[in-house]
Length: 544
Image (tube, rainbow, N blue to C red; front, side, top):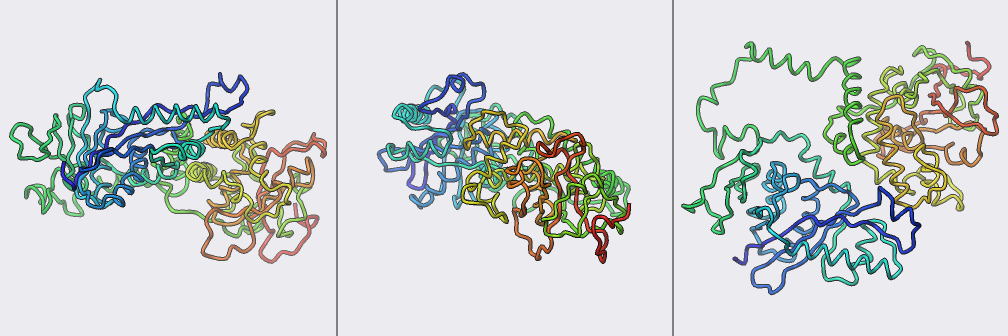
């Protein structure tokens, strides 16, 4: 091996099951114990006596190419920093078709290597039944060490704990990979249309030629050159158009002359197909989002919901706008008006009637964005996307306190309170960080179904979707501690370029009339709107 080369041997170790020093019996026999992904490996540098051992850890349980390259990122960055002379990397792994031996990994290999400053790479796949290797040993020793830490009195509840408890006592380099790191890789590949590589299952060596172009053969050859007479390499262009073009120009004139006149029948057909993909704005657009929600309902996990959200194009952002009862032809919701709180930023607003079918919060968003409540599917889909793709933001206490004054006694309890207000919370649950996260993820999975009632986390997401602050107006009845948490200003995740002005009003209300005000609970949302741009009237003066 040359001084400019490096061998990297990687594998996914079996997931580590999180443990606590003291736990009740039900935790040990639970069916959904928290697990940590371990991506282990080592690399060899010419002239060095020992390999460098490493392990990437993550709370995400993804084992696909996007996860592989998220785990490899810190390793390659470290390699580039500590061994700048290395230009070519030879990867070795097993041939799992869900992880390494597939077109998406081939594409990432052909692009990531050059983006990180290396000049070339190969990927070699071991034969089935190849036996154990160094990555297996790395995983084994780390899991044994973690179990020993638990016996010593420590709790390991997530990947952050795993790294913190093991790092001081091991020479293995440990990295923590966030779910957002994996999603960042997915975003670069989700819209790529890649060609299937013929004979993928027989491939044992991949050579990178240029971005999106590889060479492959059915046996790993150490000469790694296409001049080897015994082991022929074949070119593969991963992009759909690559098979017609080579670096420097197209293969033949026939392909180049195939362009049609703009008015030809083929182009009219193509235009018709484009129109089918981008239907008319109103009902067709809503149908598109309804179909997307139906697809999200097939997801079996929060991670799968995330993947489907990343792969779906939402289109242009939407935003809230000034709406008026008289001008936009809304009706005042007089039942909600009886509960309408006076301590809100704009007292000259009134609750209006929207659908009360479980889609009430998306309907509120539709009113503020479009001036009617007929686009609940689009607003529901956008809320799901926001919560699924930015879970880490909505699971941080400091982000949920923005725009909200809390007493010192309540600080640190907001996120736990939000979890307790969820339908996914069961009385008696111990609300640690992982439990809150599981409740959040279960809630996101649940709300992909239309006509499913939403809550405070979804109000936060709606604020970002509409790019405006929302005042969450909670009636002065029911549990006062609940009102203390939910009657508040909600700020969008992203600061808007323009001054926000008055916040939009979304009121918690109820369609029931049989409740005692002391034990009152909401089951409906309604938007609060001014009567007209110039109206200055009291609630009793609003015409029926």
